[in-house]
Image (cartoon, rainbow, N blue to C red; front, side, top):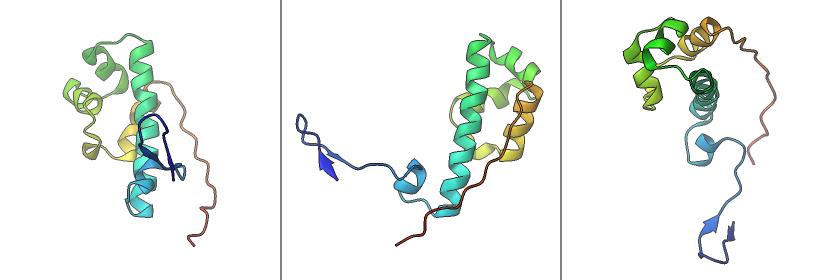
Length: 105
């Protein structure tokens, strides 16, 4: 951990998953990381298309209130499956890559 000289704030380098860094168990941290990445792609789809929530809902195959929930950060209401399905409706292919996690010391 090092200190920001200007503000005296302690800064710790991330281990690569902010959810693990703040103390979530490994399984939950990885699930949240994956969900966050999927949500980012959905948000980019909506932003780049300059879609209203109603338009986005129609294109993503869900209701407008579901889009509202997503954009308000209510991720606990979604599964990874539902996020992948929305991206598929948007014409975005989701690929999976696995890597071995570093062993805990």
